[in-house]
Length: 91
Image (tube, rainbow, N blue to C red; front, side, top):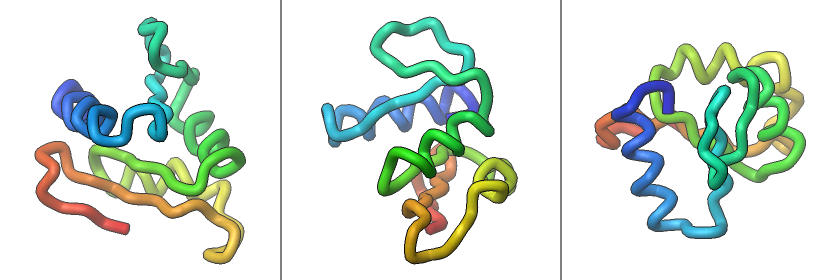
């Protein structure tokens, strides 16, 4: 999530998925969350390591973050963008 509201929504996902959900925070300090230095690093790791990524926030930010790593719909991970209130999802 890009804001505190988005982070709150991700906390709810974490409760649902438990250990099946790795969480990342940009320049964070929490020890229970993996830390990355920027959104580009998050996207790169996500494309290398995971079957799916969830962004909570603006779709344009997510699109710019993943653009350099796109290869093919047969190999890229699924990407979901969810608005901060959790009402809308864009695959």
